[in-house]
Length: 154
Image 1: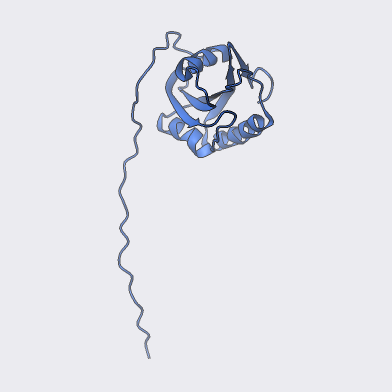
Image 2 (image 1 turned 90 degrees about the vertical axis):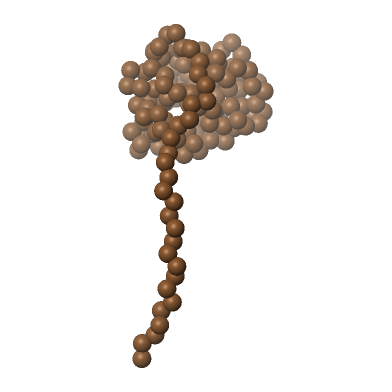
């Protein structure tokens, strides 16, 4: 005796298009990022002086020319959660060869925390899998910055 099997209705699958939407632009007269100071100046210009911690990604082409800036996270007074998925989303869409991570410390003191170091190590590993090199992680303070690359933290 054969058992009748109920057939489920077909599943609809969305057809999607993924694209980056330009939200504005800023002028960058130097054209290339050659030093952590160059990256810090560009990040400071983009960020302004937020009262909360903000994380941005500077997307770069193969010649270290910035092609896109993306605000990844706007957090609280002392924390801004990040996940590799959000960090690399704009880099993938911008066809980036490399990125520079930047975030501010509203306290004005750009000293890397243990969490900053741990998250950066995790993101460097994720970037290696994706083939997108993280050149540096810059922390912006009042009239100062800290570069993970210069401090030997990456």
